Length: 435
Ligand SMILES: C[S@@+](CC[C@H](N)C(=O)[O-])C[C@H]1O[C@@H](n2cnc3c(N)ncnc32)[C@H](O)[C@@H]1O
Image (cartoon, rainbow, N blue to C red; front, side):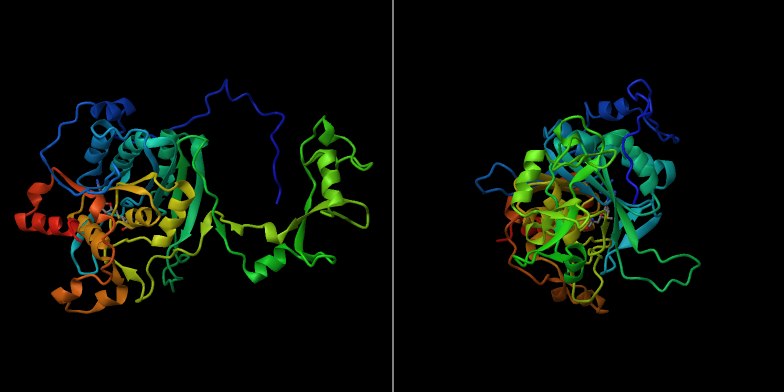
């Protein structure tokens, strides 16, 4: 693989505007979007709150259009700059309706084209305001809208803050009958708010095969497994690292990676391998490896694919291990994690399990109900949803020991409580007061 070095002929980009934007009908001025928020008018709201814990923080679940809720978080709840991690898995512009495994209407995904783009852009602009300076955002999409949303995210977050375009294997291979390759991937766009962002590098365990391929050598004296890596790097240097070491200059166009003193020290410890032709290489020992650094293709996080995997029954529920990877990599315990397209609450559960604080929003009543039940009672094997006639008692969820988070959660309804009967509100209160 050829690796480029910075071109000597590079133009001075400070003098040239190299930015570009995506144009479409109905694209608002950014000030209009942020300005709108300064005098928001809210409908009356219903709030169910339970927080008898010591901590001042209350996890928050909101039922309403996330645009309205994001304005509220920014301008009423003073959360600007406080959120460490945002993961969203919004509608994908599919022009479809989604039902749960119990055939309840869950949500519609009906915005397409320019309307979809502006819907997303407005929310991304507000999300950026909510992110802390060292925060990150992950946006999960499929092949339909990932490209234009990437351009919008470059505008909103800055192209320099783009970190990865992650490809996830979402399902098993398909026996496709159409004239095209099987579609088994979707995509996660990862941006940070600045270049100083929270980052806990993720590693995968070595397989025996990968270890033997990568660390091919065994040190005779010690039995330690190691690999050989160059002691030079691209680029010419004038100082000590560009000079002679043990009578040898670095190869043309390169410099030593270490000072001669450091190289002497490594050599004295036996950590330099000398080839029969007298070329030095550094020994890197397997025992010091943390594992395989995770790359930008994720193969291990398929969504529920067998009858024993526990799910909530909500459509498009994501794999909890996928969310754990993101939450662990881009936040620390005690940080605030936000998902304003919460669905079945996978992000919120991952945040909870990993000792993060959380804020969830969804405009689907069925989502809020699912999240509340998931926290109160857990999820159940996918196979259980396949039964034709589901009895009321079978709907009670299987695990019933997770009463931890609901005791610290507030539930707020934005302009939506009129859609609920008194009985429903009572049901919600019961879920939130579970003990
Ligand atoms: C793809 S699903 C999210 C699934 C979720 N990641 C999970 O693991 O269950 C998208 C969710 O966005 C919600 N949604 C769509 N438009 C919304 C809006 N304007 N405000 C709040 N939620 C919205 C839908 O109700 C739906 O639950």
